Length: 310
Image (cartoon, rainbow, N blue to C red; front, side, top):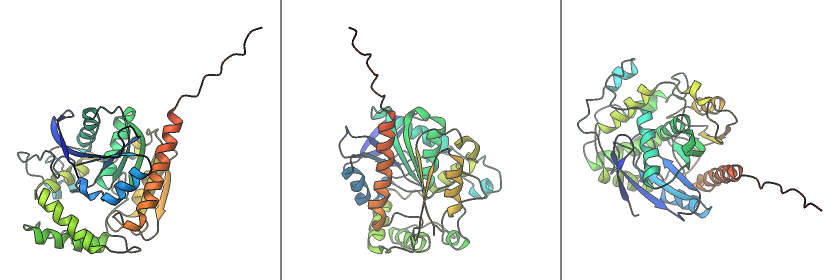
Protein backbone atom coordinates (compact mmCIF):
# COMPACT_ATOMS: atom_id res chain seq x y z
CA UNK A 1 0.00 0.00 0.00
CA UNK A 2 1.40 3.35 -1.08
CA UNK A 3 -0.14 6.17 0.94
CA UNK A 4 0.48 9.73 -0.20
CA UNK A 5 -0.36 13.03 1.43
CA UNK A 6 -1.96 16.06 -0.16
CA UNK A 7 -1.16 19.36 1.59
CA UNK A 8 -3.40 22.42 1.94
CA UNK A 9 -6.58 20.54 1.07
CA UNK A 10 -9.89 22.41 0.93
CA UNK A 11 -10.92 25.61 2.70
CA UNK A 12 -9.40 24.35 5.96
CA UNK A 13 -6.00 23.75 4.29
CA UNK A 14 -5.53 20.41 6.03
CA UNK A 15 -3.27 17.54 5.07
CA UNK A 16 -5.07 14.46 3.73
CA UNK A 17 -3.57 10.98 3.49
CA UNK A 18 -4.88 9.00 0.53
CA UNK A 19 -4.23 6.05 -1.74
CA UNK A 20 -5.09 5.53 -5.42
CA UNK A 21 -5.71 2.05 -6.82
CA UNK A 22 -6.22 0.97 -10.42
CA UNK A 23 -6.08 2.76 -13.75
CA UNK A 24 -6.08 6.56 -13.28
CA UNK A 25 -7.89 6.86 -16.63
CA UNK A 26 -10.82 4.75 -15.41
CA UNK A 27 -13.91 6.36 -13.84
CA UNK A 28 -12.88 7.53 -10.34
CA UNK A 29 -14.68 6.34 -7.23
CA UNK A 30 -14.02 8.12 -3.94
CA UNK A 31 -14.48 5.93 -0.86
CA UNK A 32 -15.44 7.80 2.32
CA UNK A 33 -15.21 5.85 5.58
CA UNK A 34 -17.20 6.33 8.78
CA UNK A 35 -16.62 7.41 12.35
CA UNK A 36 -12.99 6.82 13.37
CA UNK A 37 -12.66 4.63 10.27
CA UNK A 38 -9.43 4.93 8.33
CA UNK A 39 -8.74 4.28 4.67
CA UNK A 40 -7.59 0.77 5.60
CA UNK A 41 -11.10 0.06 6.85
CA UNK A 42 -12.02 -0.24 3.19
CA UNK A 43 -10.72 -3.83 2.81
CA UNK A 44 -8.04 -4.37 0.18
CA UNK A 45 -10.05 -7.21 -1.33
CA UNK A 46 -13.16 -5.04 -1.67
CA UNK A 47 -11.13 -2.31 -3.36
CA UNK A 48 -9.64 -4.93 -5.70
CA UNK A 49 -13.17 -5.98 -6.69
CA UNK A 50 -13.91 -2.39 -7.74
CA UNK A 51 -10.63 -2.08 -9.63
CA UNK A 52 -11.23 -5.38 -11.43
CA UNK A 53 -14.58 -4.01 -12.61
CA UNK A 54 -12.99 -1.01 -14.26
CA UNK A 55 -13.00 1.70 -11.58
CA UNK A 56 -10.17 3.87 -10.29
CA UNK A 57 -10.37 3.73 -6.49
CA UNK A 58 -9.38 6.56 -4.15
CA UNK A 59 -9.58 5.94 -0.41
CA UNK A 60 -8.47 8.44 2.22
CA UNK A 61 -8.33 9.30 5.91
CA UNK A 62 -10.89 11.87 7.01
CA UNK A 63 -9.71 14.77 9.16
CA UNK A 64 -9.07 13.68 12.75
CA UNK A 65 -8.37 10.16 11.54
CA UNK A 66 -5.40 8.06 10.48
CA UNK A 67 -2.54 9.98 8.92
CA UNK A 68 -4.56 13.07 7.98
CA UNK A 69 -4.56 16.29 10.03
CA UNK A 70 -5.77 15.96 13.63
CA UNK A 71 -7.25 18.99 15.36
CA UNK A 72 -5.36 18.58 18.61
CA UNK A 73 -5.83 22.24 19.58
CA UNK A 74 -9.60 22.20 19.09
CA UNK A 75 -11.94 22.71 22.07
CA UNK A 76 -12.83 19.63 24.08
CA UNK A 77 -15.86 17.96 22.43
CA UNK A 78 -18.91 17.37 24.61
CA UNK A 79 -20.95 14.63 22.96
CA UNK A 80 -23.45 14.35 25.82
CA UNK A 81 -24.25 18.06 25.55
CA UNK A 82 -24.53 17.80 21.76
CA UNK A 83 -27.01 14.95 22.05
CA UNK A 84 -28.97 17.06 24.53
CA UNK A 85 -29.19 19.91 22.01
CA UNK A 86 -26.09 22.00 22.73
CA UNK A 87 -23.60 21.48 19.90
CA UNK A 88 -21.47 24.51 20.77
CA UNK A 89 -18.43 22.28 21.34
CA UNK A 90 -18.37 21.24 17.67
CA UNK A 91 -15.07 22.11 16.00
CA UNK A 92 -16.47 21.39 12.55
CA UNK A 93 -19.47 19.83 10.79
CA UNK A 94 -20.11 17.33 8.02
CA UNK A 95 -20.04 20.27 5.62
CA UNK A 96 -16.39 20.86 6.51
CA UNK A 97 -15.62 17.18 6.02
CA UNK A 98 -17.41 17.20 2.67
CA UNK A 99 -15.32 20.22 1.65
CA UNK A 100 -12.19 18.24 2.61
CA UNK A 101 -13.24 15.44 0.25
CA UNK A 102 -13.93 17.87 -2.58
CA UNK A 103 -10.59 19.54 -1.84
CA UNK A 104 -8.89 16.18 -2.28
CA UNK A 105 -10.50 15.86 -5.71
CA UNK A 106 -9.06 19.29 -6.50
CA UNK A 107 -5.62 18.18 -5.33
CA UNK A 108 -5.84 15.11 -7.57
CA UNK A 109 -6.98 17.13 -10.58
CA UNK A 110 -10.42 15.49 -10.71
CA UNK A 111 -13.46 17.54 -11.61
CA UNK A 112 -15.82 14.95 -10.12
CA UNK A 113 -16.07 11.35 -8.93
CA UNK A 114 -18.49 8.60 -8.04
CA UNK A 115 -18.75 8.84 -4.26
CA UNK A 116 -19.31 5.85 -2.00
CA UNK A 117 -19.76 6.36 1.73
CA UNK A 118 -20.20 4.01 4.67
CA UNK A 119 -21.89 5.05 7.94
CA UNK A 120 -20.68 8.60 8.78
CA UNK A 121 -18.85 8.48 5.47
CA UNK A 122 -22.20 8.15 3.73
CA UNK A 123 -23.40 11.23 5.61
CA UNK A 124 -20.37 13.05 4.21
CA UNK A 125 -21.13 11.66 0.75
CA UNK A 126 -24.74 12.84 1.03
CA UNK A 127 -23.47 16.29 2.01
CA UNK A 128 -21.22 16.39 -1.04
CA UNK A 129 -24.24 15.61 -3.22
CA UNK A 130 -26.23 18.38 -1.52
CA UNK A 131 -23.60 21.10 -1.32
CA UNK A 132 -21.28 20.25 -4.23
CA UNK A 133 -23.59 18.70 -6.84
CA UNK A 134 -21.22 19.38 -9.71
CA UNK A 135 -18.47 17.29 -8.11
CA UNK A 136 -20.35 14.00 -7.78
CA UNK A 137 -21.29 11.64 -10.62
CA UNK A 138 -23.18 9.06 -8.57
CA UNK A 139 -23.87 8.46 -4.89
CA UNK A 140 -23.76 5.19 -3.00
CA UNK A 141 -24.90 5.55 0.62
CA UNK A 142 -24.27 2.46 2.75
CA UNK A 143 -25.34 1.63 6.32
CA UNK A 144 -26.29 5.23 7.08
CA UNK A 145 -29.17 7.64 7.65
CA UNK A 146 -30.47 11.15 7.04
CA UNK A 147 -29.65 12.80 10.37
CA UNK A 148 -33.28 12.56 11.46
CA UNK A 149 -33.01 11.25 15.05
CA UNK A 150 -36.18 9.20 14.66
CA UNK A 151 -34.48 6.78 12.23
CA UNK A 152 -31.23 4.85 12.02
CA UNK A 153 -30.61 4.53 15.74
CA UNK A 154 -28.28 1.95 17.29
CA UNK A 155 -29.55 -0.83 19.52
CA UNK A 156 -28.97 -0.20 23.25
CA UNK A 157 -26.72 -3.23 23.61
CA UNK A 158 -24.52 -1.97 20.78
CA UNK A 159 -24.16 1.46 22.36
CA UNK A 160 -23.34 -0.19 25.68
CA UNK A 161 -20.22 -1.67 24.07
CA UNK A 162 -18.83 1.86 23.82
CA UNK A 163 -19.32 2.53 27.54
CA UNK A 164 -16.32 3.18 29.72
CA UNK A 165 -13.06 4.97 28.99
CA UNK A 166 -11.47 4.64 25.56
CA UNK A 167 -8.74 2.01 25.15
CA UNK A 168 -5.23 3.10 26.10
CA UNK A 169 -3.21 0.22 24.65
CA UNK A 170 -3.05 -1.62 21.35
CA UNK A 171 -4.41 -4.78 22.95
CA UNK A 172 -7.34 -2.95 24.53
CA UNK A 173 -8.16 -1.29 21.19
CA UNK A 174 -8.20 -4.65 19.43
CA UNK A 175 -10.43 -6.23 22.07
CA UNK A 176 -12.82 -3.28 21.98
CA UNK A 177 -13.10 -3.61 18.21
CA UNK A 178 -13.82 -7.33 18.45
CA UNK A 179 -16.49 -6.75 21.11
CA UNK A 180 -18.21 -4.04 19.07
CA UNK A 181 -18.28 -5.96 15.81
CA UNK A 182 -19.50 -9.14 17.43
CA UNK A 183 -22.59 -7.04 18.19
CA UNK A 184 -22.68 -4.78 15.13
CA UNK A 185 -21.27 -7.06 12.43
CA UNK A 186 -23.19 -9.22 9.96
CA UNK A 187 -24.83 -12.19 11.70
CA UNK A 188 -25.66 -13.85 8.40
CA UNK A 189 -22.04 -14.07 7.33
CA UNK A 190 -18.75 -15.43 8.67
CA UNK A 191 -17.21 -13.39 11.47
CA UNK A 192 -13.60 -13.06 10.33
CA UNK A 193 -12.02 -12.38 13.71
CA UNK A 194 -8.45 -12.81 12.49
CA UNK A 195 -8.87 -10.16 9.79
CA UNK A 196 -10.66 -7.86 12.24
CA UNK A 197 -7.87 -8.16 14.80
CA UNK A 198 -5.22 -7.47 12.17
CA UNK A 199 -7.04 -4.40 10.87
CA UNK A 200 -7.72 -3.10 14.40
CA UNK A 201 -4.03 -3.40 15.23
CA UNK A 202 -3.00 -1.56 12.05
CA UNK A 203 -5.59 1.11 12.80
CA UNK A 204 -4.12 1.65 16.28
CA UNK A 205 -0.59 1.81 14.85
CA UNK A 206 -1.59 4.52 12.38
CA UNK A 207 -3.59 6.62 14.85
CA UNK A 208 -4.85 6.31 18.42
CA UNK A 209 -6.13 9.84 19.04
CA UNK A 210 -8.59 9.24 21.89
CA UNK A 211 -10.43 12.55 21.50
CA UNK A 212 -10.74 12.64 17.72
CA UNK A 213 -13.63 10.20 17.55
CA UNK A 214 -15.65 12.43 19.88
CA UNK A 215 -14.92 15.45 17.67
CA UNK A 216 -16.23 13.53 14.67
CA UNK A 217 -19.30 12.33 16.60
CA UNK A 218 -20.15 15.88 17.68
CA UNK A 219 -19.76 16.99 14.05
CA UNK A 220 -22.42 14.46 13.03
CA UNK A 221 -24.85 15.63 15.70
CA UNK A 222 -24.18 19.32 14.99
CA UNK A 223 -24.99 18.84 11.30
CA UNK A 224 -28.64 18.07 11.94
CA UNK A 225 -31.30 16.51 9.72
CA UNK A 226 -30.56 16.40 5.96
CA UNK A 227 -33.94 15.00 4.89
CA UNK A 228 -35.32 18.13 3.24
CA UNK A 229 -32.02 18.93 1.51
CA UNK A 230 -31.65 15.38 0.22
CA UNK A 231 -34.70 15.99 -1.95
CA UNK A 232 -32.48 18.24 -4.11
CA UNK A 233 -30.03 15.44 -4.95
CA UNK A 234 -30.14 14.78 -8.68
CA UNK A 235 -27.39 12.22 -9.27
CA UNK A 236 -28.03 8.48 -9.68
CA UNK A 237 -28.19 7.08 -6.16
CA UNK A 238 -27.92 3.64 -4.60
CA UNK A 239 -28.75 3.09 -0.92
CA UNK A 240 -27.46 -0.15 0.61
CA UNK A 241 -28.34 -1.26 4.12
CA UNK A 242 -28.11 -4.43 6.16
CA UNK A 243 -31.39 -5.82 7.44
CA UNK A 244 -29.61 -6.74 10.69
CA UNK A 245 -27.64 -3.52 11.22
CA UNK A 246 -27.41 -3.06 15.00
CA UNK A 247 -25.38 0.16 14.77
CA UNK A 248 -27.66 2.03 12.37
CA UNK A 249 -31.15 0.57 12.10
CA UNK A 250 -32.37 -0.20 8.59
CA UNK A 251 -34.96 2.57 9.01
CA UNK A 252 -32.06 4.96 8.33
CA UNK A 253 -31.46 3.45 4.91
CA UNK A 254 -35.15 3.41 4.09
CA UNK A 255 -35.45 7.09 5.04
CA UNK A 256 -32.42 7.98 2.93
CA UNK A 257 -33.82 6.26 -0.15
CA UNK A 258 -37.23 7.85 0.39
CA UNK A 259 -35.70 11.32 0.61
CA UNK A 260 -33.59 11.15 -2.58
CA UNK A 261 -35.61 11.24 -5.81
CA UNK A 262 -35.19 8.06 -7.84
CA UNK A 263 -32.85 6.37 -5.35
CA UNK A 264 -32.61 2.59 -5.46
CA UNK A 265 -32.81 0.84 -2.09
CA UNK A 266 -31.13 -2.52 -1.55
CA UNK A 267 -31.66 -4.19 1.85
CA UNK A 268 -29.41 -7.20 2.34
CA UNK A 269 -30.51 -10.00 4.65
CA UNK A 270 -27.87 -11.07 7.17
CA UNK A 271 -25.81 -7.91 6.71
CA UNK A 272 -24.96 -5.67 9.66
CA UNK A 273 -22.70 -2.66 10.06
CA UNK A 274 -19.65 -3.96 8.23
CA UNK A 275 -18.42 -5.26 4.88
CA UNK A 276 -18.33 -9.07 5.10
CA UNK A 277 -16.01 -10.76 2.62
CA UNK A 278 -18.80 -12.83 1.05
CA UNK A 279 -20.59 -9.63 -0.03
CA UNK A 280 -17.62 -7.92 -1.68
CA UNK A 281 -18.40 -9.15 -5.23
CA UNK A 282 -22.10 -8.24 -4.97
CA UNK A 283 -21.49 -4.81 -3.44
CA UNK A 284 -18.75 -4.03 -5.96
CA UNK A 285 -20.98 -5.11 -8.85
CA UNK A 286 -23.84 -2.89 -7.68
CA UNK A 287 -21.55 0.13 -7.22
CA UNK A 288 -19.91 -0.46 -10.59
CA UNK A 289 -23.23 -0.86 -12.39
CA UNK A 290 -24.43 2.44 -10.94
CA UNK A 291 -21.18 4.16 -11.91
CA UNK A 292 -21.19 2.87 -15.47
CA UNK A 293 -24.85 3.79 -15.95
CA UNK A 294 -24.10 7.29 -14.68
CA UNK A 295 -21.10 7.53 -17.01
CA UNK A 296 -23.22 6.48 -19.99
CA UNK A 297 -26.00 8.90 -19.09
CA UNK A 298 -23.57 11.81 -18.87
CA UNK A 299 -22.21 11.34 -22.40
CA UNK A 300 -23.84 13.69 -24.91
CA UNK A 301 -25.69 11.97 -27.69
CA UNK A 302 -24.30 12.35 -31.18
CA UNK A 303 -25.99 15.22 -32.94
CA UNK A 304 -27.94 13.89 -35.95
CA UNK A 305 -26.59 15.20 -39.22
CA UNK A 306 -29.01 16.60 -41.81
CA UNK A 307 -29.37 14.59 -45.02
CA UNK A 308 -27.13 15.72 -47.85
CA UNK A 309 -28.62 18.27 -50.21
CA UNK A 310 -29.08 17.31 -53.83
